[in-house]
Length: 78
Image 1 (cartoon, one colour):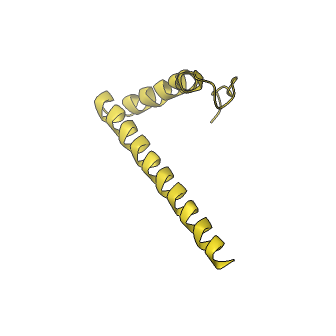
Image 2 (tube, rainbow, N blue to C red):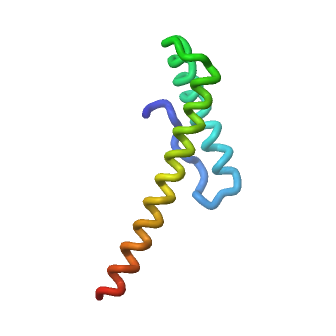
């Protein structure tokens, strides 16, 4: 997705999370505006974004757990 600036601080910087929020805010507002223009209610769009984000976080955690499990199994097989 274009229009999102790259990080300007290292991953361990205490402000990185806030800077990421600022970087995605305008593009996210564009998505919300586009969905509202398409006929969705703003509260529906915001709720959907929250639920999609939550599902992505859960999937990311599941993938990380699966990767760790597969690495442990591989170590045991070696």
